[in-house]
Length: 341
Ligand SMILES: NC(=O)C1=CN([C@@H]2O[C@H](COP(=O)(O)OP(=O)(O)OC[C@H]3O[C@@H](n4cnc5c(N)ncnc54)[C@H](OP(=O)(O)O)[C@@H]3O)[C@@H](O)[C@H]2O)C=CC1
Ligand SMILES: CC(C)=CCC[C@@H](C)[C@H]1CC[C@H]2C3=C(CC[C@]12C)[C@@]1(C)CCC(=O)[C@@H](C)[C@@H]1CC3
Image (cartoon, rainbow, N blue to C red):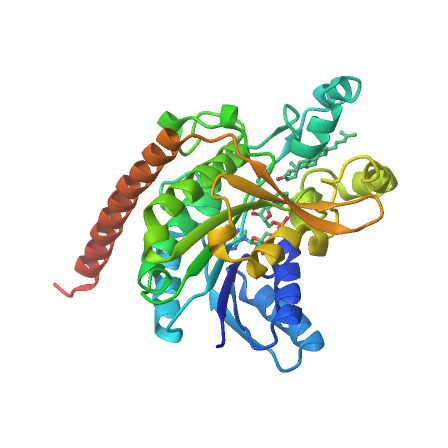
């Protein structure tokens, strides 16, 4: 049976490395790269076809941060495929990151040093903005767009007779203290990235609860610290070049410095090979790399509770209704404007 796998944010970094690994694993796969930038998506497909000439690699235009784009992409998926076996929700942004250098050096000489290097706790903030849909951009991209995509694809994902999987690329930067259920979109804080990733952890649990009986299983992973466009955006490139030998040195002491996209994709790949019933919906599956470069996956319990996850789920359903209502009003207005008087 040819399995259909959709990967968001597949044109670079961890998403692209996952595609490479999946094609090596299953040559019969039908792989769909869901990307906002079609030029980069085509380049990614070319790269994949160089090492897997016979692979079936499709492209799909998807800007996960735009409601209209998500709805159109979902329609396209439903038209193209009769099933979706895996939906990897991997696209993510961390705009305008700022490192608190003072806090970093203070952390360096504290007992919190290992935690600081694996979670960036206390040293990393971002500046967010409102997008064209009136949503906070980080929330819309990292969480809500993906939620809407799942909702739209439910007919395929919850089809009788087979199981489907959604897998969130979360982060160990996801922290309860950065998340406020009364401020879902993190309009008032400086850690929208951490908040959005914590929300994805909560949402994954809620999805498992509500959808397992319909054959849909949701899991969460952390790729570790990986050198990608996202991380290169945090510090100037000359600085990364400067500290890179130190990063490789640190890897000897912490297994969370996976560093290469392929290592970071370990847990995503590992989940592809597991039976969904064997997975723990409360665990985050971490990609880890030993000092000698061996990859492995380790589940760690998430700091989440059922009540909060339920409240988040219902708030997202409410927001979905509101967003759909606004969109149909906007479409009606546009139509009225184009009708000749
Ligand atoms: N690197 C790391 O250390 C860690 C990364 N992560 C997570 O891993 C995931 C992948 O990131 P990573 O590979 O590191 O970084 P990259 O920047 O290389 O990859 C991010 C991908 O997401 C895509 N993307 C961003 N915004 C949108 C959008 N609106 N619609 C569609 N696609 C979009 C990007 O496309 P485009 O080329 O168009 O920008 C790109 O393909 C993210 O969710 C990130 O939060 C988690 C923990 C650690
Ligand atoms: C200022 C100096 C000298 C060094 C700064 C090092 C940090 C830039 C670096 C330390 C821990 C890193 C880290 C991430 C980004 C870069 C650091 C803050 C992440 C936040 C990247 C994205 C994620 O999702 C996390 C899992 C990473 C956690 C560790």
